[in-house]
Image (cartoon, rainbow, N blue to C red; front, side, top):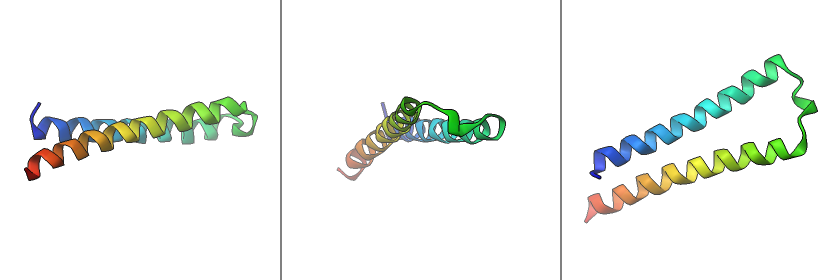
Length: 68
């Protein structure tokens, strides 16, 4: 996989995070966010955190190879 493809994958995963956050904001507009069970907060936080870490690791890996 070349540098350009890795940057595209990193951008795609960050877009996915933005879509998840947007979905949560829209959900709060149409439902009562206060009635969420505690584990949904954990699930959403883990999903966002994992996706961001994947994007950062892919992007960082690509920039290391580019400098060498």
